[in-house]
Image (cartoon, rainbow, N blue to C red; front, side, top):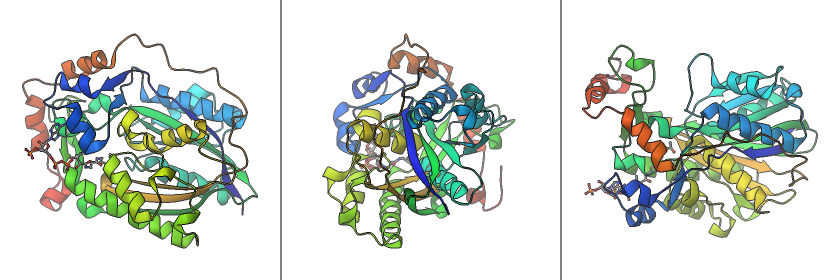
Length: 378
Ligand code: ACO
């Protein structure tokens, strides 16, 4: 049975930077509060679509692997920022890449989508369904952020990155994977206003209300990521001191530090990008992985632990054995369309579309869900 080596990697990060000071111009918050509670200093706001970010990331990953898009078998678009439900976003990436043979799947488990996608693509390669795949982690959260809510607006950012997987006989790529979901707590993180449950309620798309219980999520995040990390190491017969690098989900510096402590891995071995990019949900792990490679933090044969959690509340921990190559075979000429606006200008445009009189919000509050009424539905 073949393994699925990671042979290509690339990012599609938008350039506009939104600082804590920028957020303080329209929210009752401060640089000091945000840094102390989260470790975040900046995040990116995209001027292009999620599909464009994903396409640039995938194109760079394919060039890095030396793989022609026409030879690609599978695209997994991981994330919860879909432009449309039908057609799916992976098909948009497929047509933009010219990957005419590729099966195209959208996969949404919120922040864990990239790791669920990596596990899915690995399984499909190992069982012979496909020989190669692109797995993308991408989010465009700025377009449906509730910019009036300081509890969440300071935490998130936009971004994308992708990897290429290829069949190999060497024991490389994902060698262990633990996936799960604490669904009893699914109501602790809900974005009201996106989805067919809101149809016919007079709600404007993008004018959202976030149900967000930060402290509940924090506790589940630490437990879910720590337990899954312990399990994947045990399943693979690996001890914490054998791990060369941890590339965790980046939701909060304090969560990352707690998970590293439980896993028994020193912070020197942990990649941290949350100060630069905030929480990009599904994009945090692949963007951090690409950054680790560009910094020379990954060496041939490195053993890499990747824990994450997200809405659902889903959790995941993967163990990856890196291959021989840590440098790209080639580069892609693709880049994002030019941007002329500041991040604050981009956010102001989105805020202008959000209902200042709260009409959408009244509708959003009226929509009930399964766990609120235990089956009562919308
Ligand atoms: N600026 C200033 N004050 C704020 C802000 C802000 N941006 N946000 C909240 N506050 C205030 C609140 O109003 C509250 O004030 P009060 O005590 O007077 O009511 C207080 O700060 C909240 O303090 P704490 O609850 O003690 O804050 P905590 O230390 O728990 O940090 C945080 C909050 C950062 C949200 C933390 O709980 C967290 O990181 N949770 C996990 C969040 C997360 O992981 N989200 C991702 C979800 S999954 C995914 O990745 C998609």
